[in-house]
Picture 1 (cartoon, helix red, strand yellow):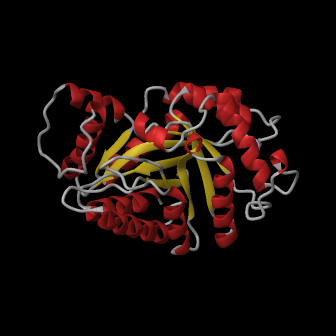
Picture 2: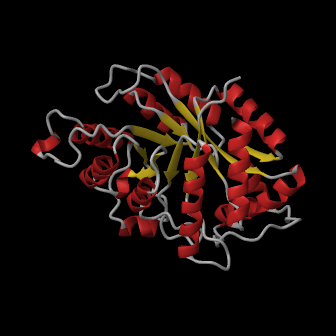
Length: 328
């Protein structure tokens, strides 16, 4: 079986005992590895007011990654559109395309990527499905060469045709992506409960009749948490950092990435984390290849996007290197 394209999602995780500068250095080491190892895309996700993630200024992270690469597609996975004025997003990503050509992706989500108080400080706008669809329509008009929406043009965005993706973890997001005729990225790496139903809804709802449609057929990217090491035992040990992070997310006790632990308490937080991490591939190269092949077979994914957390950035780089080798 020919492997589907393999991409990376990065939230610029901050490890306990280090700071944001070190997290950024680790991220761009991973970008260089992705460029050299044949990964298809490198996406950054928007998050705010979190001690765990430093991926707040998404467009700036993307620009630096584009500047240090020549082949890799780079984009957002995603920009939380209700947090921003759509015209500002169009001008930011139009400028990126003007500088770096056809390597820019604009993945869009409706979630806040933060807590309610921070969302208010971001002056978050409407996030209902119709408003989201209307804003996507406006964005595509600004990226196009035709009539500008509301009589307002954007010279930096016009004609760039930046490809737009819809991100989501539920059937609601899937339905929006399908009806708009756009590619769909499923956030199953942390919210897997509706993965298969969402994919089914997306494919059944897919339409080429929408003015926003840019595809002739559905295209689905599936998110999966991955950690590859030399042995299954070592991979599970290093993956305990990811489990601890998910326990913190489930219980509200968020903190920087913790060192791996040989044993974790099997309490309510741990059980909640196990549900969040059901879409995972962890183990030796042989084990992970088998798990990812099974995921592609059952989801019929057109592409996989992986997220890897490790307290030691070198463990993450080693995992990404092993993954690229086993997938070729």
